[in-house]
Amino acid sequence: MPNVRTLALLLAVCPATVAFRSASAYTSRLRLCMSSFSSSPSSTLTSSASTPIYAYLSVESTQTTARELLLSRTDQANQCAPFSVLAGSQGLGRGTNSRTWISPPDNLYLTVVVPSSKLLVPGAFPLSLVPLKVGTVVHSAITKVLPSAAAASVSLKWPNDVLVDGKKVAGVLIEMDRNCFLIGVGCNVGVAPTVAKEGRELGREAGRLLDYCYVEGDAGNGNGTGSGNAHGIKPEGVKAIIAELADTITSDIHAWAENCEGTGEQVVEDFSRHVEFNRRIQMRTENGEGGGRGRWVTPLNLERDGRLRVRVEGGGVEVLTSDYTI
Image 1 (cartoon, rainbow, N blue to C red):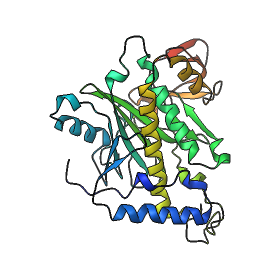
Image 2: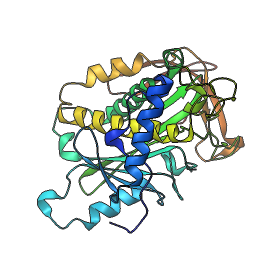
Image 3: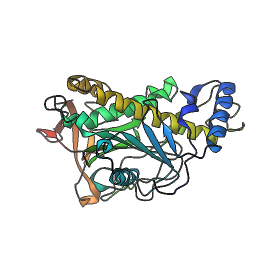
Image 4: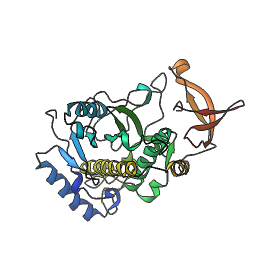
C-alpha cells in the first residue's frame, strides 16, 4: 500500500447513531473512539462485514486508489476479494459524467469494491438497478445517524442522489475494473461545498448532515454556547459520524451482494418509497449549453428495470436512462 498517513477514524469502537445519543454517553464513547485510533499504527480497519477498509488522510480519489490496490494484487485466487477505501479528502474527486466532486476534509469519501461475480449471475439481478440499490443503502445509512425529525426529510433523487430538505448531501459513482464493481460514495457530513450555478458543472445546492444533527443535552446544542458548535456536535463527532456511515454502507452493500438474486422488484419498490414523484425538476443540458439548464420534467414512476418515466413540460412522456436532472 502507498505510504500515507492514516485517517483519524476507528470503525470498530465508534458508537452507533452518535448524532443523537445523550451527552454523557456521546462524550465518553467518542473519547474512546478517538484515543484508540490515535494510538493505532495501522491504516487497515475492519467493517462489521469483516471486510478490510483501507483508510487514508488524502488521496487523488478513492476510485483511483481502489484501482491501484486491485492492480497491485498478484494472487489470482484473491484478485477480487472485497475491500473498501476511505479517505479524509480527495484531490481529484469526480462524480457522474466526469463532473467534479468537491472533496474538502470532514466529509465521507468511500469506495466499496464488490466482485462482479456476485452481481453478474445471468437472470439474478438487473444491473440497471444497482445504482438504485446503492442509493437506497446510502439513504438508509444517513437516516440512522440523524435525529428522527431530520430523518423524515431525507429523500432520493433518481438514480442515486440523497437529499435532505431538497439539498444534495450524497451521491454515488459506480464503475468497473478488473472484474470488480467500484462503488464510490460521497457524503457531505461537516462541509457543504459551493456548487456551480451554470455550465457543465451545474448542480443542485449542497447540504451537510451537520446542519441536521444534534446531541441531546449538550450545552452547545442550538445556541453555540457549549463546547460543541451551534449544532451540538464536537469536531470529533463529525469523524465518528463519517466512521458510522462508512461501516454501515460497506456492510449493507456486501450483505446485499451476497443475496441479491431475485431482489429487483423489491429494489424498485424501496427506491420509489423515497422519491418525490409528480414534483417538477429541471433537466441538465449534456455539455452545459444554455447555462446548463434544459427542459422541465415531472417524474411519474420507475420502470421495472429502474429507468425513470417522466412527463415533459409542454407535452409527451419519456423514459430516462441516464441522470440528466439537476
